[in-house]
Length: 310
Image 1 (tube, rainbow, N blue to C red):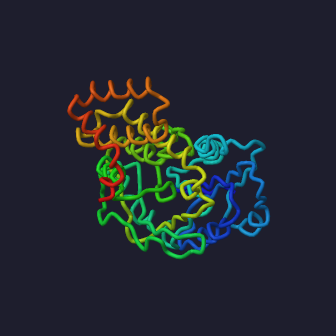
Image 2: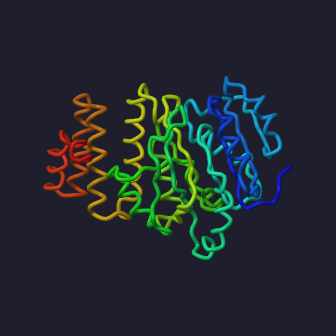
Image 3: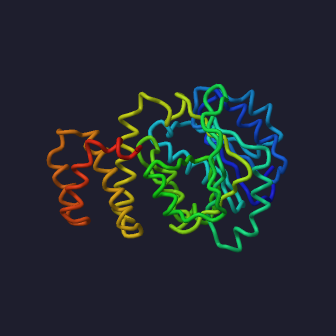
């Protein structure tokens, strides 16, 4: 039964390994004012036992007959939201191996009036990172601010001085419908583009007194070392998308960082096999950044990660 609630929690399901912990964290919410939707992406890992066990909190479960996440994970996110979400105003897309503090939903409602008054479309929770054994990898990460400029957050993200994952965000339905999730290889960068576009490159509201637990394991896309080449391609695609569509929204310094990172991954993936494409990219950088800045990016390339993490 669909309850009239403000918040929809959507789980695009595929992996069974940690799914019970995810569902248990939702059942343990101190505030049960949400609707829980699960879209099964034709997974070979049948979750029916868990669907029955947690039937009391599941609003709707849908098994799809075709797997699209294996080709384009973002399409499954969009499909699950479009097919299942009803009249809610806000959406949390929760990965099937992440889990929530028991007060996450309650804190959403504690802040929602202020968020609406400020006209903000994106909410971000503090996070902790766990491994496959639930041991903490990163004990705590929060913004220590209530309001964060999305562009400033992205600047930190591209410098690797902050981190971000899909599960820690809540988006307004209106902002989602306007933009939807963009598709890149392995969904790499899709969440970054989403919170930039969904916020209209404006403010993000940070809830810092409870946590989303993001799981980093080899079962996840981000933690799987065999997907290195595909993830690199996804990085190239999402950076190219931002440069093509939004470069003028960023400061000159951030534009430099976008091109520097893009050039690095482009050269790392294609190396010397794409002389014509590389030449075209360099000419575009000269046009947009100037010759001196382009030469600096090319010179920086060999020591890119050493510089990035120093």
